[in-house]
Length: 359
Image (tube, rainbow, N blue to C red; front, side, top):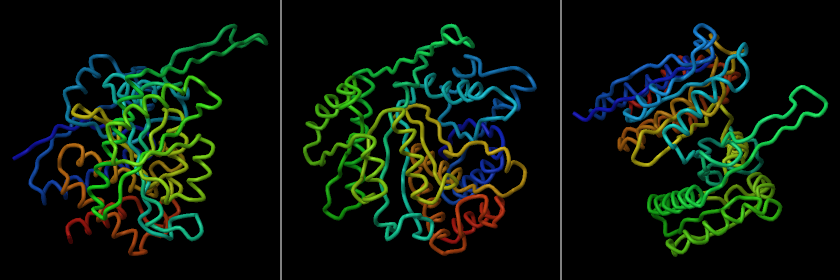
């Protein structure tokens, strides 16, 4: 029997609650598909830091490299310096494991979840490939004369040819894969999103994209500056198939995309290094005001489990989860994908599992 070793970081706030529902779906699918898994839980979170003052040590990052995947709930505690633990855990994973792709599907399953007029599931089904280890998130910079009237804050954005080229290549390969799966005769399309007109160093993205595109003559190419991209995501989301973009721009436009598919509670992401240990998570934060109330939407965490299984080669199991979530949302039994749905976190997880087992 095939087995997978999965690191588990439930985290803070609603993280443990939504992760619990994701694990219900994982258990159900494992039984149906006939694979095994081992969970190794790690305590790192804001609450753990308050108790121990311990951040993620390098030895644990070394441990993570030996896992097949990592599942993360959410990180962030109101009593801890903003970003302190997030940088330790999330950036520790991204940089420590070189998870150079942040993969964010933007897929609308049910029309009633979309805030746009006259747009439905056929119009909103694309993927954002966000470069995940460079740009302004490279943590190069600092403060001079902090706390004085003469304070200066500097941050350097870093773009390497390797980083740009491999993100673009992943995007083109994904567009090929999506075209094969559609099997309707349509070609894939990759849209580069940058701001090379105003930020001239983004020209490295333009050139890397053009070079990679030559290796994929059957894939259509397109380009949008990030401000125009935000406009087109609202006006004509059906134009997009695969978007490839910088770390910062990807962080911004994917939250916009999450709202188009129904809200932060339904959106999942993968932090990926193809062929190596990768991390999967819902994109929402820890939402401490909802913690312990059993009201948070767990569909993002359940979707993250589906993405993780697809990455691990359990494609049938991944499809079972995605189909169950899709069927549930199309049924109209879930009025919204947020804490106002009126459905308890645990009940929504049970509803997904029921549909998994009914297939």
